[in-house]
Length: 345
Image (tube, rainbow, N blue to C red):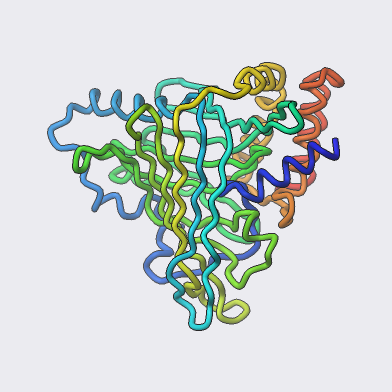
């Protein structure tokens, strides 16, 4: 179990997805409108002209579903432009690994993709449940980060949601990370989905260093790539408060490019085996988070820098116990539900 925890910690520190909420975004001028109206800048994202709505919907779905598969992943993170005087951008960091992405739900207008890392150590394969991305067509609400461990269901106006998709990203324990709304477009022959400006909590790779910034203002893009892979490109404006309770100010611009290249020469079967054994448990965990969010029109989650949500470590341990057949899914779900109820509101 100690080795398992070390592998998990290393993977999540290097991952650009795992995160922790540590501060209140507050107001950031016009860009803070993303809190009040998700997908604020859809108006400047021209939808594909002349495309039949049904055909466009089918093309969107195909682009989302094409992200499923077996991959070699490259995470490329670069702090570039310092906006705060005296700040020294961090050196570029490149990491990577092997990841399988599986469609775990597809009801037409709703698609869920689960990512699973497969790590080899001393000749053995270890599977780490990674992030999840949920896609909803023409959503009425999207779950957005509000600060200080708070996420809220934000209304999406009728004009904004027409032909648009929300993407909601969840952490390793299925607690929320960020959400945004955008349309799939075709520009210069390249299809892409682009969110509006959205707030995000710090990723663990930053939170554990206790930096001067304490949240991100970000744009998120997804695009299919040649050869059957895809890219995930993020603009992260790392923000910090000038004084306690003061307005946020930009500290540094970060660019993140995650490249997913089709590749299956690793222990893909280990990832599929883990998911087969634990999918019922994780379905129960997802349901518990969904119920908490529905009750409060959002959720407050107690978090810490090292592990994300304070329940993450135990929720992952329970999954390992289920995978090892040391515990049945039903009692594991019962304990998970109690933990989530105790540490969220």
